[in-house]
Length: 290
Image: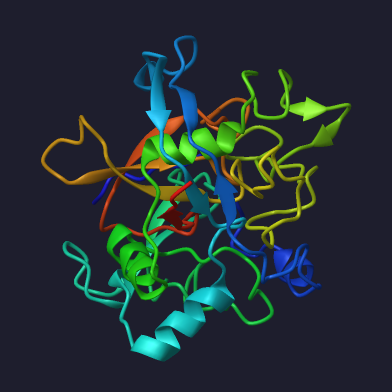
């Protein structure tokens, strides 16, 4: 079985009611233009895979203000008839499906499970649905699936450097918003509050994925670059081994203080390019001429 990235939630969660509310931001926000500049990429004092910190020049580009949503992905599917990887037979399982987080139990301490029937329309398993959750980020998407959407939209996936530059938004603090994870007790992103993986206080108001744009944007006006769901980049992980792995960025609703503290712009993680989960999504970019 593929190694699973991640750090959350009970399959009987109550997040459905939260998701059926009005969207937190307009679903029609235009992409945000990011100017060219000198970017500091990586970090020397956190996880070793982030080192070394280095400076590189980044050309200008524009980037989606939010993660691609279920509604946006549905339009792509309707227009093209595309079949996602999770809807196909999975090697080693001989059924279609994807990985879903479930709270561990005394009889089953694992928190990741391959679930038959999990896909972008049923992100947490066949009994789940995206009905009334159109504004949540689409998940159970592979790199190939993300590339297909981006090509249809006339765009592409960001490189790791582009993504990190956009997420950092000119700041040099540990977290994009400052040196503390929570500011004056207020959560700044959709993450896990409590002891992972057994207790989550949901102090941020969400048990799993939040509708896009429910937390303050960064200085560039980008929402949910940190937390909510991990995001695919177009950069291969340099130590990926025999199975192709891609860099994902930003952390997710599963990242906690005691596990997977990767809700920082410099944080990075490898993940199998063709294996889908209920906590990885994406956004797209386009090169621009300044």
